[in-house]
Length: 395
View (cartoon, rainbow, N blue to C red):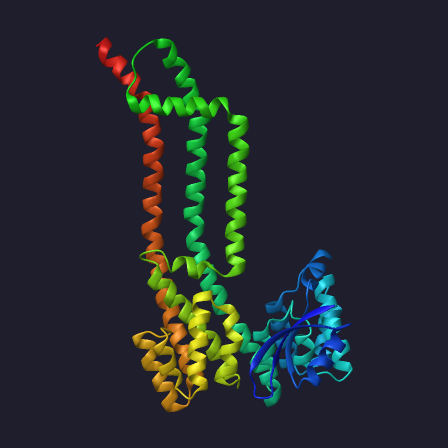
């Protein structure tokens, strides 16, 4: 069986490798022989098999419930046992039972969750591992919950701003398609028998409507297939995390897309630094959450930091700062509160981005309504223009 492993080397460098092993325990022993400390271990193809059994594992809900039980005074194993007793989902129950089994065998909590990479991302494993050094797991869980809440808030703001325009386009497209498939062919039949010369634009509209009406059995499946293709493509872009890369190419949005990406980078790195993780390791852990372009910039900045450059200088040299965030980074370096300053910078730009999205949506929505109204109105006017000409000739 093949395993994909993300592990820390002896000098705390994050390394990803793929190796063959009989099971997870054997893969872990291979890492130990190579003096590697696993952060996450995933059997290739395991995610699909796990999902096929139905249900899902909600990491945020798990963390919230675990934090509540730990704050109530339960030990970690007792808290996990309590969660298993109340859990009805097969997948979540299996995940927690596996954690309990491994911890009873003497494995650390961070190592146990690292063996289930399909449910626990490297970021989560990293903050738990750092918390084990200070015996402050509840604080680390609270920090991760707050981080995910902020990320979900940003995502919800963007999705919420896109829902209404998507509905407008869908309804407008459906109305225009109905007019072209049903109403326009009816008018075309009437005008064809009248023997009158029609305006050029009306002739084109009627020709298209007549064509669509006669081939509706072909047009409708094509439209449905196009919708499914668009939805599938949008989901794939979301899974691959390429929205930022696409937005960076759109005039007027590119600058704001960069700000949102920087904000996410700062929030993630700030959380890890506050959890006691070193800068270089934190940069390695967050690389997978960024777009391809930012991963290249971050790798270059990481190399400069490894060579001894300050974080502010490395980030500035590779386009990972703004004038305001650069000042805050320098203050964080002088005060030794780099994690806190990164988090504050992220919060500042989160608020600014939310206000920008709100203003943009207030402009885009009326513009879309006007565009759809113009399209539908143009179809109706072109349909009735011959009638207006006929009424004028009768007068």
